[in-house]
Image (tube, rainbow, N blue to C red; front, side, top):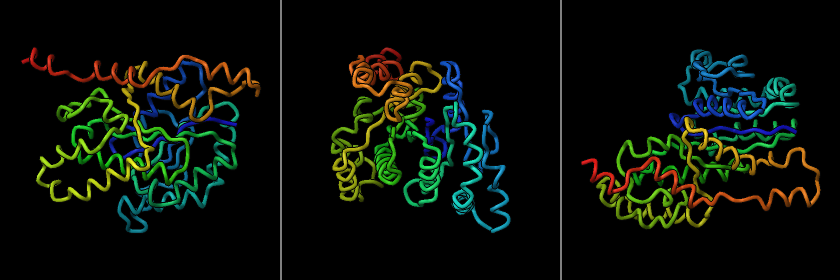
Length: 301
């Protein structure tokens, strides 16, 4: 049995930076880590990868040979990987004995809520190699400053969760830059807990482009709330405390915290009664660290 993370998210959300920072952090706390690059368009890797899809197929070659654009080329590459899953399995088998796995996937979001090839690859690896994986879905935190983009991020997160059917953590990445594109309309916990989205409607109506889609936006928000699946945690990949909190959460979702324990009620109960870091206080601490309140803004002026 091996444990790991499936790292996904839109382009620019920080997946490769995340894999680099997370692998360094896990190594520092004593875990042997193997990063698997499954993005055929990522040819400038800041980390040493144990397995690289470019040894099997390259996006540039696919685009030239089949006259495809980048999106079509990535779909082709995932299809090709699915048909050659034995190649990936043979590369991973030696690593599964003692490594923690980080899978760095492409940023084309359609692969994870529309097409089935990436899901099939993940499920086949889970079945054949007995993996315990958690999906880490990165969303750029600055999207919270735009109500329309925030609603889009919610829909993307919900669609991906339903499609992949795996333990899933949605992460607001680059939390240190959350107000770089403007001040948030609400406290941070409104966005992390996905609270009553009707409050967003007033702010959406201020944008003449969004006002004409008022009914559509309202219904989409209702869909998100009716499922009641989506929430977010936060991450500053440069902050070891922030990374450590995320690792604790991931370890609970993929079962890593139970690895090596005797399968007795006593051992499991010891973990169950550990002190809990309440989300409210953790989010409040993040807001205090990275967001300016109104009093600070007045003092700065």
